[in-house]
Image 1 (cartoon, one colour):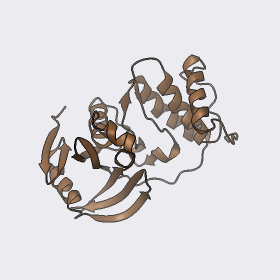
Image 2: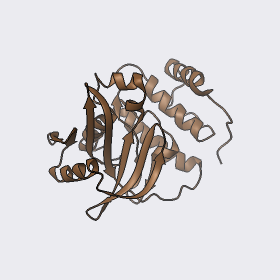
Image 3: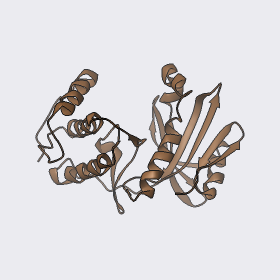
Image 4: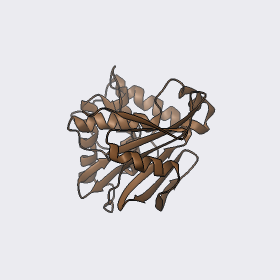
Length: 235
């Protein structure tokens, strides 16, 4: 795998594996890229489709980690979402797990050791129109989750909004691709997130074991958002 490169530009640190994306990072800091479409603008995230040098990209700023005080303080000890996404996803792609939107560059600004602004850029895909939550379609999503969990990596928010069907196959987005080391709580939480977000049941799978980790994940999910609500059958 290529070496992670780091360059300082103004008050930002640019991280990338390929030199050609350094200039794109500088243009983003200078706000000198064309915004084609703002996809999501919330207190938690900013996501847009941008154009630079004839190419299209997705630009994301994880605002939560520098707007919420507790999350901001934690960045004293962490890489932050942008850099974690770049490093973790690049490692998995390098190992042949080509189920992600490829990340190109992370841009991070710190003050007193804490992140105060950050961005990362990934490749852009033309998304096919979703055909609804049918079992055949969800089965493909389940297989993506299985590939991820087989590597002891969890998504964190495995729902249809973060699974896109493209001409290059089904891809996962919006994940830091963090490792888990003990038990299967994280993988079961991912599976439950997918199940609940499709308003139905995925049924028993060979890798979807109803055991202690599943029960713990279900308990935590119920405590966080009411758990299994408005469940309908999938056609």
